[in-house]
Image 1 (cartoon, one colour):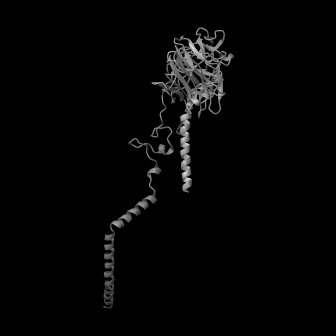
Image 2 (cartoon, helix red, strand yellow):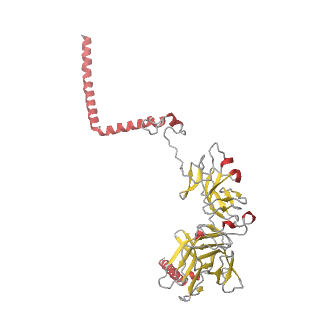
Image 3 (tube, one colour):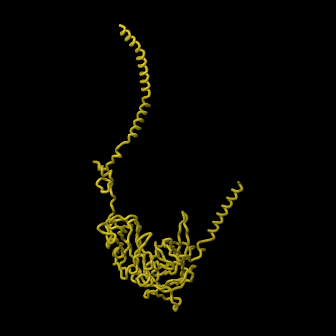
Length: 461
């Protein structure tokens, strides 16, 4: 038995030593890169940006990934600092790209645009994409891709060798995840066209247009409106409209067939073209409505889409609404509600979804929280017992007859307990009383014959 214990201890020690050796000799740099999410473009000077590409056949949840930035190309350099930021809560479709920019956001083919959370150092730096996962208390860290750069002054080992003096339009790109990096220039005057600085005769894959705004954005796609599968050209660089209000259960005299609606809000400073966009309602079972050509929302405007137009029904027990782009990608959605009361609207206000008793179709939402019904007198939904027993003078709800009456068995039990307790406390007095009673009975018993004899003698007289 002892020998077996020693063998187990030795085995555990060998496993621990082997694990230490593995982690010392296998760094994250040994992971084959790139993986699911790669870096396809980077602009280091001027209006900086990074373009990420989904290399898989499935959509990627971007919030599972983080972007890390180091201010030197090598982590061995003294004084290296780093920053990290989680990617937006959005889904990137298969084989599509998103762009993150510090300023002017040049867009050509990217389906998502967001703000780059840090500025890139011109002389040297490193950007890395990592996937983060958690299993119980264990955090998983999986590098996806990285790119480093260094100029002639620093002369550090890096993926990109930058000239000492850079053109503010210079970018770096690669046409496939495993291809080499190439240098290019952004042509802001020509949409989806770039000039390859190293080989002018070769058409560059860096074809960029212009857009600005606040993330998240939708970007220019292929085709316009309902005539194609892409987003209308007028919407390039604009934030998608937000679902702001739902009315699932109109109060009389309004009806479900005429007055249910889904409201959208346009957060942009210019009109948004909804041509070809899709409104979807439902959770387990869904219904879609495709916006007709020419449907628009004014800047900072609210627009209610009624059931008579969309034929979209909203369940009273559980429901949700979503806005999809013409390609079917989800842009915004409401929270799921559980139970819709008469006349109450499900609104987005104060940073959360909540019920209001004042629906405002086509206007700014108004928070008027439903008041919980009281059980006191005057309520129209009182039970029969509370109706028969109105509130007492103190204002608290009166109790019902059944709660005021006391069960006879309870009374009997209380009485018996009281008697037992009294018997215990006065046991000595009771004993003395019993002795006196016996003594009196003895005295009365001895006096009895005398009375009878007296009676007998009286009778004889």
